[in-house]
Structure formats: structure tokens, C-alpha cells
Image 1 (spheres, one colour):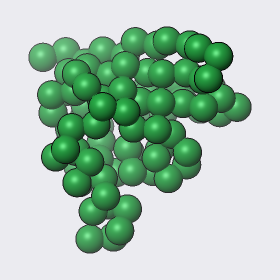
Image 2 (image 1 turned 90 degrees about the vertical axis):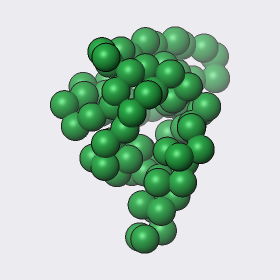
Image 3 (image 1 turned 45 degrees about the vertical axis):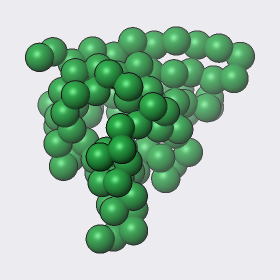
Amino acid sequence: MTYRIERSSSGRGLTFFLSGEMDSGHLAELGSLMAAESSRLVSLDLAEVTLVTREAVKFLARAEAAGAILANCPEYVRSWVDAEQSGA
């Protein structure tokens, strides 16, 4: 399975639509794309993500803590992100 990042801009901010397997090899690219948009509201749409690694969960938790919105987040990913943020 491949990993894909698609970008959509609107008046309210920017959404990155992620799909496929999200692992540590893809996080640097996504982090760079998000950093370039630091002045805008960034949403990460996870509806098409099929697999996340522990490193990806940590990345998502940090991104959300920094103000990013996790949209269409699968329940299992949401629970892992919440656990990561609570230090569990």
C-alpha cells in the first residue's frame, strides 16, 4: 500500500488528506508541509488512513496539541492519540 498526501485550501485553512499506511518514513514530509503553513489552520483528514505506527500516533498527538485538527480520525487512532496525550 502506498501513502499519499493531497492538499486542499479554503478560506478557513488548509486540509491535508492522508491515505494509506502512515509510518515514520512519511512523517518528515508531512511535518515539513505543515511547518510551511504554520500561519494557517491545518486539518489532517485521516478517513483513508489504513495503518498507523507508534511514531505516527506520537506525531499526530503533537500536531493536535500544536493546534492541528484531526478530522475523520478512525476510533482506534483517536484512542491511541488520546492515550499518548494523557501520558498513558
